[in-house]
Image (cartoon, rainbow, N blue to C red):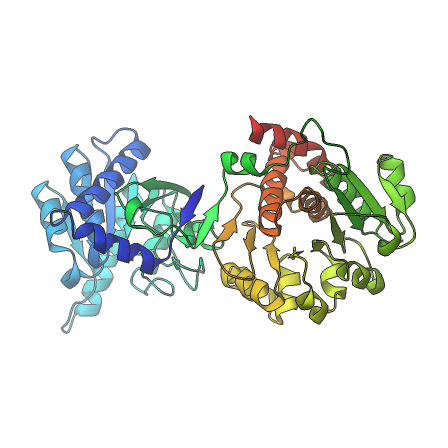
Length: 494
């Protein structure tokens, strides 16, 4: 499992570790890992042109020491100092001893300071244009807001150049704890982060700026608390959670999931939700709604009822809402059930919010950004720009586990704890009906006995993998995703 910790937690752990190490040892560990990652990216170091964008503090120090290591291996290294009077002195001295060059920007005074700054900025831009590698050491993990006016043009120049861009610990301009991007920011091909992941490296929109992330172990592990801010499941974690039938299992012991979905206008939503549910580990699927004929035609193993949720027969979990249209009565009837309930799509709009909060059995809500915005009473852009705080707020406000769908799917519990972020998926999953498959899959896992948090996390993981397999670089339909779930399941188990 990958974990991510807040800036405050990381800094506390670093202080505890540094108290037991020789002065500067932690920075040298980080610089060594950064230099190795840069060398791997370059392939051949000797004769390569490297530009360091150096801000103040320890982040700049890591960058300068790494640059010195690359210079010793024959690279031509130039450091562009954005805060010359606050540059890390030891790192700067190390770079100069190895023959590295220095260009100073900013903090000039005098009659011609503006002209000097403009000329140096132009010179720095030309260096970037000729570079093979640009290392972003402008701002550390404590940065807030976008890049300053003097740094933004350099980041833009690096993005347009043919150089590879490596961010130190976190791309400058993105916010480490929230994953928000509030202005100009560096777009990296590779981010080399130290000790542990930071939340912004796992959550969009910041994740999009990080490129590939490489974690360098600097010895922080023993200093970090057991509970992180974020966690991302990996194959072994998901495999341990998958429900498997025992020798004495029958379809009822494995769990029965109820699907209340579809309408005369949207019968396909019912079919797709059932398709996901049949592949989710439960022993049987009961369908309630007006699309029974379409469901049985596609999946004759489904148990179909037209008597409403209360008369459908015993279930261990319900899914309600996909394609439900305006059927608020069915949504209310499902919410009244004393079993776990997953609410999706139209169900999120139709559900009485007080009824959701008042439920004693577990509840899993699965909105996309637009639905989440409506539930919170904010603009969609606000949710998309602050996904982590939005999912936490939704979970707390509705006293439910919330799965916020998107390029990085997040799962948050109402009582706090680590937010789960899903690392699988593909942009091709942005297709009609894909969410209906996810709902059925998650509902089936609920019926099989998983908690709302685990069911949502495992369903998102399998759904994302299935999307990758089904797409294989080409467009797909939601039914293709459902059909690829068994392949994803086997891949995780193997």
